[in-house]
Amino acid sequence: MNRHDLRELQDIHSYPCLTITLPTHRTRPDKGQDPIRVKNLVTEGTNRLLGEFSKRDLAPLLDRLDTLAAAIDYDNTLDGLVLAVNRDMGREYVLPFTLNERVVVDDTFFTRDLVHALNRTRRYWVLSLSEQSTRLFAATREDLEEITTGGFPMRHSGPGGDTALPGGQGVNTSAYRDDRHRQFFRDVDKAYRAFASDDPLPLALAGVDRYLAFFREVSGGDEIIATLRGNVDDLTPHDLGRRIWPQVREGFTARRREALHELEAAMGQRRAASGLTDVWPLAGLGRGKVLVVEEGYHQPGRLNESGQLNLNVDDPTAPDVMDDAVDEVITTVLAKGGRVVFVEDGELAFHNRIALILRF
Image (cartoon, rainbow, N blue to C red; front, side, top):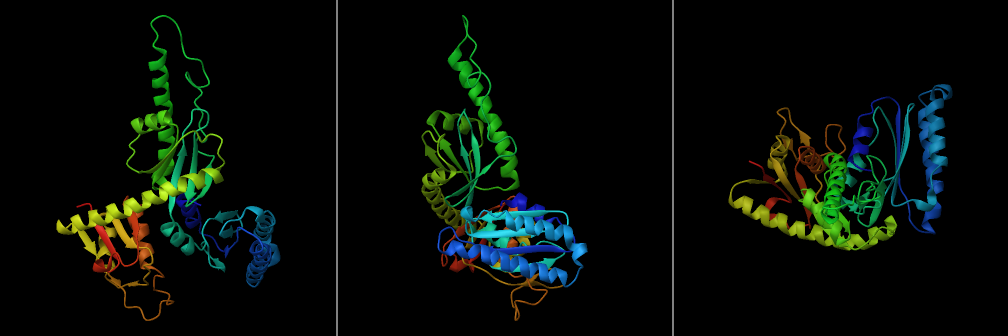
């Protein structure tokens, strides 16, 4: 799942929307429990719906739910599973992060846990560069999911790729080949940007030095967090993820250090805000360049009549209380083109666990 998938779910408004979420397992014997848990949750969801609607009225939804549940590939589950079903659609998401066990019937799909997980999980893009087949992956830690839309995988079918180079006197075949490769990787970058603009994440590159150099030359490259050198054409997503994740992990650590240094400098220039109540309005105004937040920081809150954030919450379950105002700020900063960097708990004690580096 990526932010595009999430927004598609959030844009659906119809009653009833049934959302089932649960933790799943990668290995046995725990994996053997998953089909039983799914069956029980499907039964619970079905019974709740039948308490409000007739079986005839629910037939399209229940058919989709049963079909979706029957098609789950339990041999390839990860850490979490989502089933989202209404009368018009049914979708399954296999996720590399754990989820709480829930059955929710509402006029929208339940996405709060997904927002939380997407905001706080180490996610990034991977481009495996090759003239044979350049592949794009959505990655979470060492887990890679190949993207097969938007033109990917991409193959260099022009001269210097699948097509022979022109010959003849006066033709510099080496320069011509290089120019065609630049054009190919320019096309790769353009196709990748369509995904990155929708879900702006760090980028890891894999490939031989020649292709890495061409791609860096024609792309911005500011978001590149790690590079794996060598021919990776024959690697499975599983093997590529295991090889590239250690370098990406080091890249995340380096970015954490850079963000702390940038925050220190911004504080000296009075271009930063500290504490959730001060960060909240500035994030909403789109002034956030980089949000720096401790990984374990969660805080319920409510807005008063003037739109100010109040953190003095007696009952976190009250209807007017945000379950986690920190996640709301993270989502806002990302939506307005800012970056989010997580640091270890305790590193922002001086800033009350959260700080915002300002654009202006």
